Image (cartoon, rainbow, N blue to C red; front, side, top):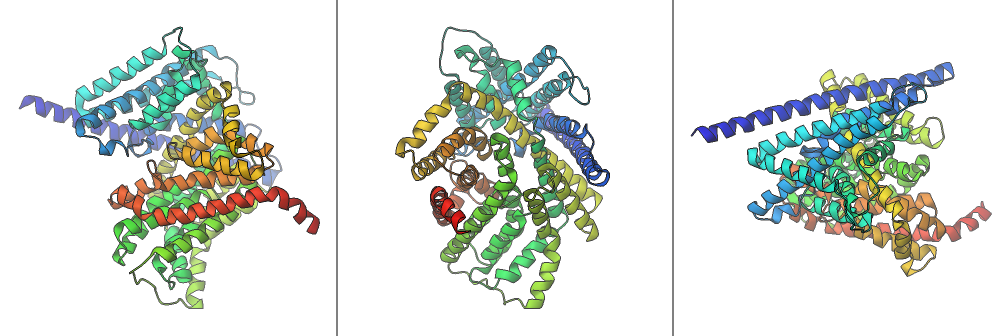
Length: 616
């Protein structure tokens, strides 16, 4: 009896320590985000009131963002932020699934060791101080070394809680073995990017956290002629995060969280119901219009999917929608959040390609309108046997609902107009969005201090996970550039021809296939820099191509095997993911039709643009 009791006690202690570490990191990350917000707002105020901002604010803000990612990266090693592909594991027998879990955590341990020792290594090699503040450059890399160490602790506690002492020890030993293998030198030479792709693919298949799998995969290229030792991997990772534009990601996430915590999202739903609630399939159409309106405040499809699964889906089921169909509707309409501005996906694309954020956001409005219309048609055609139409709302009811929803609707308008007309930068606009959301909730007395703290913690953790993915993709993208994969990609895309239509179709086919196996963010970071030069050479407008690329990849939020939006909704609603994938097929069909129309319009634009210019 003594041994099982001891094991149970160890598991309970591991769970307590893991929860405590997670809470501590979330609180620290939320505090950093609050300081970051106050700093950017102070700089904005100084620039517009005093006529000049603080010379040191941009540099300090970038360093604080790096600290936020370093603090939050252990949270991306386990739990809901780990970006694990577990769909294939669900079909495995328990014994094989357990082995895959051990291997997945071993790969994550390898990635954490690279961050830990690579960060420490580059800190001892780099010298100098930052340009404005004079901070020692090694501080940035020490932060990620500490983050890697905390990730190891998180993985050990997670493994102990899930699989006991033996399972935890097996993962740690395997991770150390992989790390040791990566340090070996040999006479074997192979294409490093191919080795990295195979290793990352294996990591994804067994359920390893995506950012850690990418880091471990690049590390494993060393024995095969790879040119990126550990310090170079961490230095490239940190360099990929050193863009002021990326600060907009945590701020937009925070603005969406504040609106949700403050109850303004429910006001959007009430307004949407007065507009389309009396239509056929009125409740499903209300979900669609609510998603369109919420897109202007959130920018995160996953956040919208989670909100819809908790708030809208139970009502759909209560009105007679089959659970799988209700889940499919919520997942389908949620993909609009990363299309209609402000969009996290467009910010990631801009950071990877240097495209204009303002132009991308305007293109997102056009594409979002086309996709919303397609989804409305798909819902109208597919909903059968459900009578859920509400009485037509009067003009007075619509007016009252509009007034109630205006604070949330206004956020997206203010952000996009400010960016598009050059009044504020993207990062400043995102900080103003946070201030706007906070003041709106306080004016309506719908948000208390506890809600603010919860929003800060959640937004900081999500921003750190996204930031780590962006940083982890940088070394992988470097390998792709060294191996001239862009030339091979150009040959593949132009296999149908070198004209605008042929390249547009070829690029879409490549994205449709790649999106089945790559996370949306990783696909943007890795493929956009490869495909964009080919599109420009064919005469396609780069902004239009960027919009179509994001639309193509966002559709994969609904396709197996990854289908992240389906998994989020099905997990919350406790509906089998396979049933939701089947139910979402009609909506997937209309979205592909919309993608085709956008692609044809993009291909025709080079010929139409001069004629339109001559007319006007």
